[in-house]
Each structure stands twice: as structure tokens, then as C-alpha cells.
Amino acid sequence: MNTADPTTSPSITAVNWVAFKTLVVKEIRRFMRIWVQTIVPPAVSAVLYMMIFGKLIGDRIGVMDGHSYINFVVPGIIMMAIITNSYSNAVSSFFGAKFQSHIEEMLIAPIHNWVILAGFVVGGVCRGLCVGALVAAVSLLFTRITVENPLITIMVVVLTSTLFAIGGVINSVYAKSFDDISIIPNFVLTPLTYLGGIFYSVKLLPEFWYNVSLVNPVLYMINGFRYGILGSSDFPIWWSFFVIVIFILLLAAVALHLMNKGVGIKS
Image (cartoon, rainbow, N blue to C red; front, side):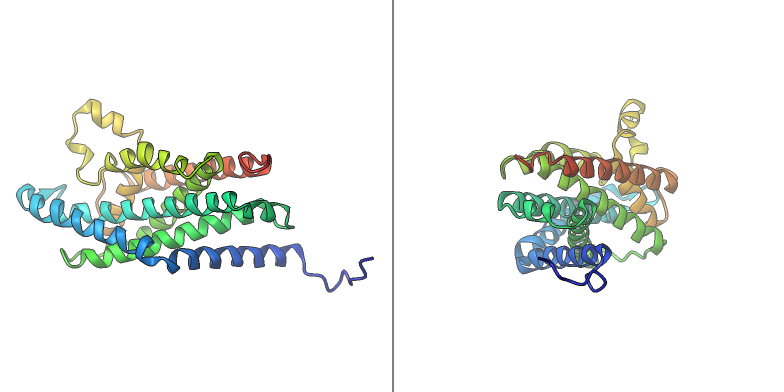
């Protein structure tokens, strides 16, 4: 018989808070423990992008949208690293929890599903921010740029990494094997990112392809980040925030619905 005093029992809020902190700490330790695999490779890739596109090709291109080409591409390269790593951390971690049957223990624990989702998402955001900071530091080897709008820059980075971390959770819910978690990054995420205006301004495109580019949500995220750093963008900054927030709300609702239904988790 349970004789515990209900007045001294931890509240559900306290339980959820402990669960959230535990998940976040576990996620951070997970990717920091193997930092050679999770943090360093994006910086190496960024060096190659900046060396080839920024310097070797950039010196021939000259100016893009009123800025030197290397300054123009640096924000896009940083954002690409943030997007990729936020997504990768969430999808691999959540699928690992499914594969090892840890997620079932979380679902039967007295914590809300949104707390579980938030824990994995914050872990992905932390990895994205770590990688983004490292790539930004590496970019100082190639150019000197100042952040024109620090608050906008931070807001765009955090919101974008949150969005793609949620997307990673959704991908892992449907994935049935480790091969499945690479389908979306390879066939959806990579094309959208490369066609999102990292290496060019969409104003240079013919009208048809310009209009096609407008349906690419990554375009607004990269331009929002570029506005924060350089102070210029192909679109008004509020477009970027509107697109990002709408997609966050939509994907978060989908992720919570899938978790509540137990799709891909409960047999």
C-alpha cells in the first residue's frame, strides 16, 4: 500500500522539468562525447566551401548583391551547417531511442509528450548552434564580416534549428531502419538547401525559376540569416520570420500528434 504523503510528492511540473533537463543533458553529452564525428566534419566541409566557392571562384565573380562574393556566401554556408546538424542530431537520437526501446520507457513515464519532444529538439538546437559557432569562427580565416543585426541573427538561427530538429523527430518516427533516416536529408533537405540561395541571389534567376524558388522555405531562412549578418536580403525580413514560425507550429503539431498516437513507436 502506498503511504507516501501527497503533500511531499513532487508535482507534475517538477517531474516534467527534471525529465526535460535530463533529456537535454543526455543529448548534449551524446554529441559532445563524439565531437570528432559530430562537430569537426561540418567545419572541415565549410573550409572547403569557402576555399573553393568563396576564394577561388569568388575572386572571379567579384560582387554579389552589393557584397564581395565571399561575404555573400559565408552566411549561407553557416546556415547550411546549422540546418544539417540540427536535423541530423534529432533524427539519429530519436531513432536510436526507438531502436533501443528507450522511447517506450519515456512514453509510459508520468511526463508529457511535448516535454519529450522539447528535449530532443533542444538537443538538436544545441548541436546546430555549436556547429554554427565553429563554422563562423572558421570563416574568419577567409574574411572579416560584422554582424549588422545581432538580435535578428540569433532569432533566425534558433528558430531555424528548432524547425529542422522537429523535422528530424518526424523523420525518425516513420523510419524503420537506419537507412530510412538518410532518405529525407539526401533527397529533400540537401536539394532545398543548395537551391535556397546559398551561392547566388535569386534576383539573378529568370522569372520562372525565381517564382519556383519562392516555394522553397529554406530560401527565406538563409535570407533572414543573411539579413542579420550583412543587413541585406532578397526579401523583407518579416517574410523569413513568418515562414519559419508557421512551419514550426505545423511540424510541432504533426510531431505531437504522431507521438500521442504512437505512430512508429507502439506495436
